Image (cartoon, rainbow, N blue to C red; front, side, top):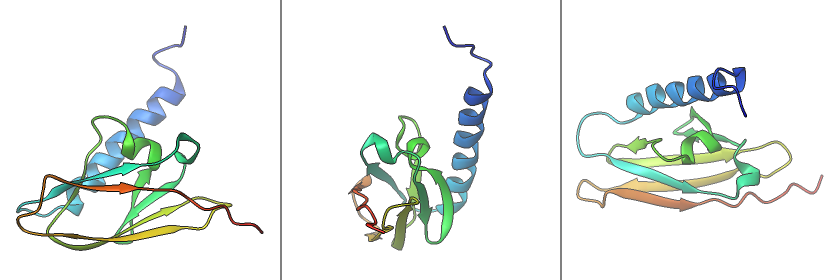
Length: 112
């Protein structure tokens, strides 16, 4: 049985807290929508950036309860992982958009 006080668990909690703080600053007041990312589990250690700001590891961002809020406007979402080509998507959030923006992410391997 795993120790609930393990350093790995604390690191995950700290990472989730940091993600929440960054995400709160990404969405100014007004109607924002949730960014929902889907990716294979082998990419959960990839880094997620929104508008050039580091949000956290993909695994922390896609877990249940994690929220990435985007304000109305155009945003650049980028996923980076060593050994793979970075993936960039531009999403536009309208003032009357739906409750979320859904992105499926597949990182192509860098053949070098």
